[in-house]
Structures are given as C-alpha cells and as structure tokens.
Image (cartoon, rainbow, N blue to C red; front, side, top):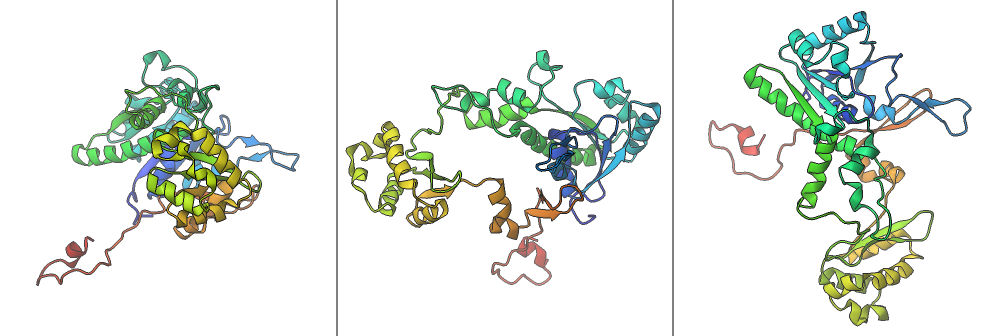
Length: 380
C-alpha cells in the first residue's frame, strides 16, 4: 500500500461501532496502516454476535467486516498497566489516534491527549463525540437515534399529519466519519508545516447540523412534508408490480411533464386543467399521485423507468442493498469486493475509495515545446 496516498501513515484506532470506525476505514482504504485496539474483555459493539437465520448459535455480525477490513487487530485491555504501556508503545510510532468513547474514558485510563502528546508530540488525536453543540449534553449517553432526534434531522421526516419518522440508518455516524477523515487529512497537512500534532474533537451532532442545515439554509424551519418538494409535481414513489417494487418519478419542469404525458400515451386525465402547468400540478398533487399510482400498479419498475427516461423523465426504480450490490455499473467501478469467512460465508465489502486513481488525460493536445515537461501538458 506504499503507493497509496497514505502509505507509510500509521493509525492507532480505538474506535467502536460506526463513527470512528468509518473514518479509519477510509484511512485504511487510502493506504494507512490501521491498528485496531480491541479487547476480549470489552468487545467492540460492531463485533458483538447476533442471531443467525436458521442457526441455533449466534454468529458475528456480517456488517462488521465492512468496518474492519484492511486493518490489523491487537488484543489490549488498556485499563491495565500492561495494556496502557502497550498502547503508549504503539502511539510512539503512530501519526494518528482515533477514538469515539464517551467523554473522559481515555482520561480516566491515563491515556488522555496530554499523555499521548507527551509520548509522541507529533501525534494527531481525533475524538468523535455524540454531542458538541451544548456542554449540557457533553456527558449524555446516546446512540444514532438520539443524536438524529435532538439535532432536528428527524423533525423533517414524515407526513404533516403524522409523527416524526426516524432515519432508517445511522446517518449521523457515517457523516461524522467523513468529517473526521477530512479533518485528519487537513491536520496531517498542517503538521507537515508545523511539525506539531493536535487534538481534534468532532461532534456527530455538529456534523449532522452542518450537513442538513446547509440544505435548508438554516433560517427556514424544517417541517414534515412527506415526499412533497416545493415546485415539484409529481415527486413521489409509486408501487409497481412485484414484491416491494417501487418507482420514483419527479418532474421539475413543464418540458419533463410533457415527456411524461407522451410516455404514458397521453391519457385523457393528463389534459385536466388541474395539471395544466407546474403550479397547478403542485396544488393538485394528490390527484396527480392517484393517477400515476394507478398506471404504475401493473408496471415492472425497470421497464417503466426505461420508458420514462427515453422521454426525458427523471424516473428510477427504488434499489435496495441487494440490488445495489448486484449493480453491474458499480461492480465495473470496483465498488464491491467479496470476501469469504468461515462463519458468515461470502460477504461484500464496499471500497470507499474505489474511484481514487491517477488519471491521465487522453484528450488531444498541442505538441509540447522543446524541453517542456510532457506531464505538465497532460495534467499529470
């Protein structure tokens, strides 16, 4: 991995569950040597064994391999003097330390940032926390559902006449993991100039607010609106023929609407004055949804999407994880690697940096002047 961008970089990884583990997974994909500190006494939440369909005994969570592939694992109980000494030995040879314990956990084990910086003044430590925006919440125990609720993300999900809906995935953990990885790359760059390490603290709540508030321009209150979007009609998922088969259709302009009308064969209802222009369609979107739902009911989602796309309509089938893993386009780009395991069998691992490669332009350029570096002309 020496030819990868982070080849020669060593990371000591205390992460458990997803937020910190996602960040160090990206660093490993970029070529860093990641040493994952684990303990059989305090098992990582990612590795905890769960129920296995059709088996009497539990197995390790298959998803664990997404976050631990490409990493080394060391069994260390850092709460013992021997374990603490072993950790400090690793830190002395490291560039980065990542942890996402509750506030104060490493301090109580005499492994807080001052101790780590004394052992290695150039080390960069990243601490991922659930809450940063309010000191009142600093010591609150919380997982992804709680953080996504208190930051207001879930307030915008669901329909106006129903309760808030939770995101079905730990979005905050992965968003914070991205923020952490980018922050660490910036810190490595800064250390190359200053020669000093530093302590970064990243809040999952901070990452969520920054991400979602940007989308809503912060000043506008987020209201539950289901699948409604300002100025878009239709804009919804419509059930199709088959098991849990859905089609997403969205029209942003009158031109796209005319394409939809043509693709459907211009049925009589499309001439209704309620659908005469974009603003009328938004006002009467429920009636419009009813007509489209009836048309989609007997359609194969992929066939219907292909037809609508041929008429310039933004329509795609709803893809679940299984469809995504089997997508030939993604497979051709090297997104997924299948690994084998004695317990769980073949298991997919998503390569987060699968698109990162040196690309040399193939465009036609003028011949370089005598003595001019060809790489400079080609952008290499």
